[in-house]
Length: 330
Image 1 (tube, rainbow, N blue to C red):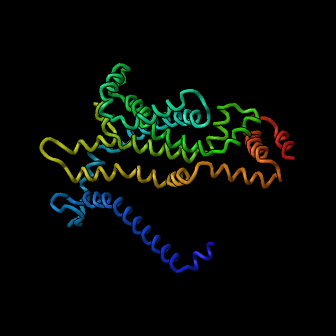
Image 2 (tube, one colour; image 1 turned 30 degrees about the vertical axis):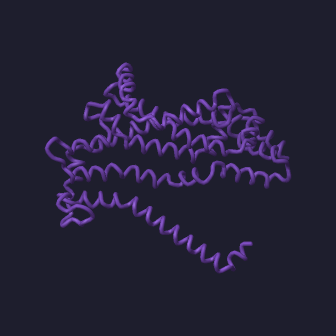
Image 3 (tube, rainbow, N blue to C red; image 1 turned 180 degrees about the horizontal axis):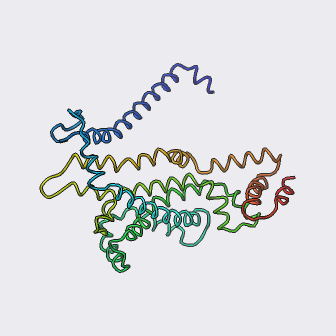
């Protein structure tokens, strides 16, 4: 069939046209994504960006904005605040979501659809609608104007997106792996930690990176619950370049370039996890299962999947000797 399609000139022309159209769309998408970044970087090198707007190259490279950002504004202090607040809040939220998503994705209970509906409905609630309730709650908890206030808000915000990513990844993992862990004597917690979590790591890492980027770029809550300048996050740094009378565009653009560097670096480092998370949930688990089946001969599917869990768990989790595993595989 494939040979006939390749030998047909009309089909080959169609395939060639599809490839050309795909490349054009990809090139356009890359161009649209990079143009704002290129414009921002060029503008940060101009002494007066308004005098030479757009993509005009600067007459002479001006680094005054970068120098003043590091020397006068102590940008590393804001970087430290953002790293602590975003990092701690991501760890707390991902730990809660990864376990709750496992319950929703792999177990049946009453009210399951209602839980999904309530979580997904939070995606459509704007932050401004929660201003007074959150502000009042932060005051009553006596954490106003502290980093703990932002950690609390960030850990509880954006749960629906992370829950959606991790839950869909869990749903693609074969149930035979859990059954194998049950045979080996593992409970729900040990099954999640020893079997499900390692396989779902790309999806969990993807949700964590998305949550970190969202917390890193967040400005509304940081400007609302933090008053002391020493405790502000990186996005709030941009407000220092604007006054009632003028705006220092050179310093503002330089600070924006510095602010977007960590998210770009973070994405480049963890981009493989995004690809794995979007390409399919249990590819790694299926490969392990097929490899184990080929090594242990012709057994039925459930028992071979069971041996996969036993082989992994006998030496790692239960502390039992590997004689039990070898007796089943022998």
